[in-house]
Length: 164
Length: 186
Image 1 (cartoon, rainbow over the protein chains, first blue to last red):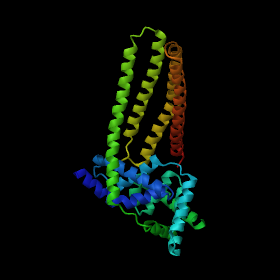
Image 2 (spheres, each protein chain N blue to C red):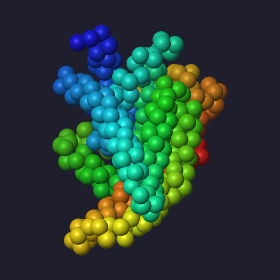
Image 3 (tube, helix red, strand yellow):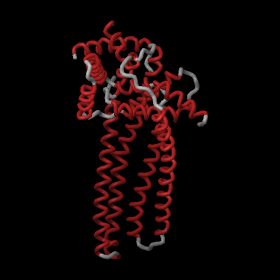
């Protein structure tokens, strides 16, 4: 394997879980759509790898490409797909704690899905534990504005999950 | 905001999905295949334009002005439509995924707004011009071809037109849907 391919594999191995979580959040927990978005994100990473100049951390750069890919590729999820997804989650877990955890995640996915695309990206990055300065660099909104917005979305999301 | 901390904790500890060697190899294969497809696509489009223009030059010696007008309208509308598609593709590929998401969103919105003009203006004009060209040629086909072959050309053209319109409708619906979603105010 060439040098570019080695670097690419390292990026893939280290970042796959977080890219997958972000895409799952973007698709409202639809695993099949999320996998397509993950694939598309890593294809974009390969195509833009030569342009990466270490001006930002590689993690920030990857999140930026991932958020933009989700924004560009997002398709309206069909109701049928969503029902199938929820059904498979419920059947696949037999123990109660797992079921409860999955139900909470389904509720969380559903609440995130009700947000507009920018707020969705902001809260997913916040859920990932990214510093707000980094979120503002990824989204392209001033740090102060991000702080206010994160506070508002957090309240909205917590309320939605608790009332669900 | 303790409740949010709890949500954050659940989010970060949801069932782990790890990268696999097979997954990476499949990805690498797809990356290479996309690069090859882009090269093949460019070759096919260039060849199509060369063949169409060569055909036009070849038939330009034909004395019938009606024939020349019909074939000229058909080929001209096709060439213009292909050129617009190539220009769109170039514009789309130029959109930089490295930019922050607000700039990216604005670039993408501009692209789909441009596509709206293509779909609502250029495509219908090209389609109508193509059909006019074909209709102009029909009497010539009828006079020079056997009745069976004439009917075959006529009906296959209608079927192809319906199929083309169906795919265009799906494409337009998809792109306008994306534009609508992008324009939803934050």
